Structure formats: structure tokens, C-alpha cells
Length: 403
Image (cartoon, rainbow, N blue to C red; front, side, top):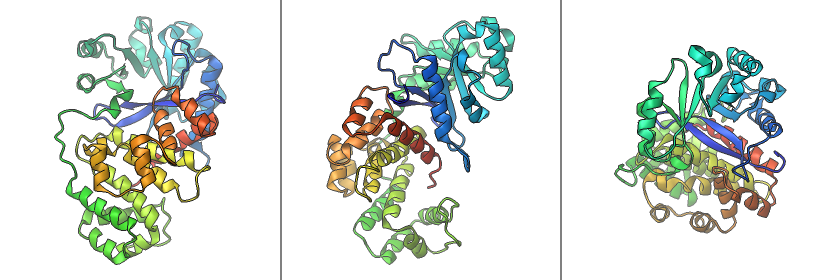
């Protein structure tokens, strides 16, 4: 299945809307049909291979991955290539009724692997539930999520976290958060929160936009340096970025002029794009920011083999800007009125057409369990394996972005 199917990700948020992890699953063409045992094992193998690196270890830093599991795969080799404290296997409560499975699960728990239990009565696991499970998934049904969340919160045991799903409105999310539940969220994170006054650009964003315009116009470095100096926080961030281990400067850079020269205009523009999103205060949520970074990087990676060299920056910007309206609390037209972008980027943002649009559309589709992924990838001649590798690579890259 991993040769023909696509990975879908769903973020797990804590009560402050921060992404603490992701649930990864195979996209289900037929929603009624569950993935087979072999398919689930293939997913863990693929993930272990692509988010672990001999040199750098776990590429997702502090993120936890939730993956569906069945008894047959509890001893699979791939599982032992995943860091136990960053791995959560989701199992059906009925599977744990089998003594051999329960014993294997308790062994994994003792070794630090997380277990999330879904679908069923947990009474038979008794008072020592935390020996068998670190999370309990609760499924909400009907409208009154707050009342259901209260019931579940009352039943909560020490040492076991509760994950609610589906949580489809921000009001339901707040009800879950207030009661100490973590919430799996589908498309909710792409919905702006109501009640936040839209203020448009804040002063930091205004300066960042001005700098982006100057970089696009190839202004002289001293002029760019002059604008940067008006914002000490921005200057500090640029110097911190250029001196970070990831950038690899051989000696400490202390002047803005040197930093701009060393970075170069295209990477400087990309860094400013990231900064514009993180400087948002209007309707801002950390999950939206992380989604924008992953989307931008994924669009760039998907187009890498197919577009001329140097087009990656524009694809990255298109991906980031596709969520900038929500991050800034503006309409897309207002965003595009504030900054001159290349015509092809504007076309991608408004219609998903042109040179970049299809790659952006494919990156977006990877966030949803949508049959569009297959048709978009096929039209672009990108194999499922390449889409999945790019997806996990973008997820890892987003964890290491320094702004």
C-alpha cells in the first residue's frame, strides 16, 4: 500500500494550541475499510526510515508520532528503530482483552513506548490502566461536546492523558482544553478563531514587509541594513540565525552588513517570509504557523525535480503565503495588496493555477484525507513514495527552522 498510497497527517494540540505531535495514517480511499495489518506495519517501517537519521537521530525533535497498530506488529523490527518516548501506538481496547497482547503492550509501555487505547470499555484494564495505556482516545458524538468532555474528565486517571476527537469547533476545543483533555484536531486548525480583532499589520510586520520589497528590488545592502537597524529585535534575530550551528558560519558574524552579504538575497527573502508569519499577533495560533512552514517546504520539495533551479524560493513563498491571510487576519486580496509578488506566485495563491499552483494544491491536499492527492500527484508525475518522502522531510525541516 505504501507504494500506491499517501500519508495523511493530523496534528495533536495541547490546550494552548501548540502542536505536540502528529497522527500519521494512510489515506483511506474507502472510508469504511481499515488499513490491513501489513499496511500498518509498512507505515511504521516507512516512518522509521525517513524521520530517523544516523547522524542527527530523531528529526522531529520534541514531536510525538501517533500510529495505528495491531497485535501482529508489536514486535516488528521497525518499531525498535523509533525512539520509544516519541512513539505512540493506537490500539483498540478489544485487542487488549487478549492476555498475550496485553503482556506485549505492557512490555512496550515499560520500555517507554506510548499506547493510546480507542473504541471500547476500559473497565477490564482496572485500576492499573496506566501500566497498559498512556493515552485514552475518546470519541465525541452529537452536539454537546462540553458535557461529554466533563464526563470523560471526571473519569480521568492519574498518569493517563485523554485525547478527544473529533473536535470540530473552537468552542469545543476550549471545552476540552479547560478540562485538561488534549484534542486531536482535523481541519479545525485551518479555521481562524473568532473574536480576535483584526488589526492588520503590526509595526514589526510593516518593517519586515518593507525589507521584503527592498530585497525584491535588489536594493543596496547599506539601505537594507539601515531599515533593519530600526528594529533591534529583528537585527538580533538575523544575527542569531546567521550564527546558528545550522547555518554553519565559520566565525561569529557581528555586523548586519556581513550577515546580509553572507546570507544572500534569496535566502534573506525566505527568512523574512518565515518571520512575517511568526510576527503575527492577530488570530495567531502556533498550529497555523507550523502548518504554513510545512506547507511551504513541502510545495518546494515537490517541485524541486520538475522546475528550473531557483524556483524553489517562489514555491516556498507561495506555500507560506497561502496561510498568511489567516495568520495576519486579512483577506488574501489585502495580503497581496501589501506586497508585490511575482505574477506566477499570485496566480498560484488565487487560483492554484500557473507554474506553482498544482504543487501548492498537492501540498495542501496532504493535510486532508482527500482523494485529490492521488489525482494531483499523478498529473504532476510524482510517485506516492516521493510525495510521502517529501511530506516527512518537510515535517522534519519545520521542526528545525530558526527565526
